Image (cartoon, rainbow, N blue to C red; front, side, top):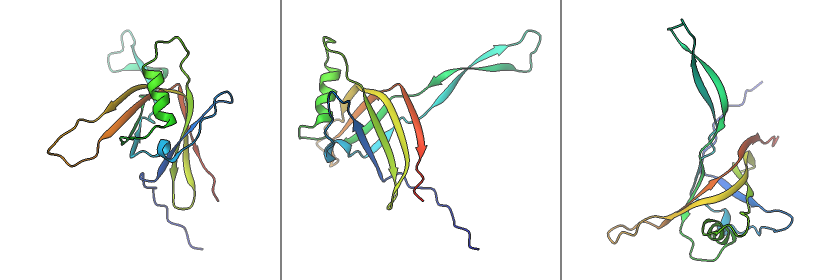
Length: 161
C-alpha cells in the first residue's frame, strides 16, 4: 500500500471574500478580492507572570485573554471605484454620525483543485489606509495598504476529499 507524501501548501494562491449583511448586500467584484499580500491572521494567548512568595526559580504564567494584530491587506493601488474603497473611505473619514458597518471577511488558502483552509474574520472594519511613496527613480508599482481591526478569527480546514 503506497503512502501519500504530504507537501505543505504554498502561500501565493489565496482569495479574500467580504460578506455583507442582509440589509446591505456586498457586491463581490474581482477588484475587491485581489491582494498581493494578506497578514495579521495571528492569534496569541496573553499571559501574566505571577511570582510566588519564597519561590525564586520561576514565576507562574497565568492565562489572561487572546489577542491579535490588525488584518493587513496589500495590493497595487486601484484607480477604479470599488465597494471596498467606498467602505474604507466612509469608515475612516467618518464623523461617527452614522455607525461603522463591520463586515465578516473570509481569507481562503487555495490549491489548484480546491479550498484548503478558510480563516473567518468577524466584525472587521478599516482603521488605516495608506499608499506607498512615489519615487521618480523607481519603477515599482504603487501599493495601497488597508488595515482592519477585527473581533476574532477562526480557522477551518476544508475536507475536500
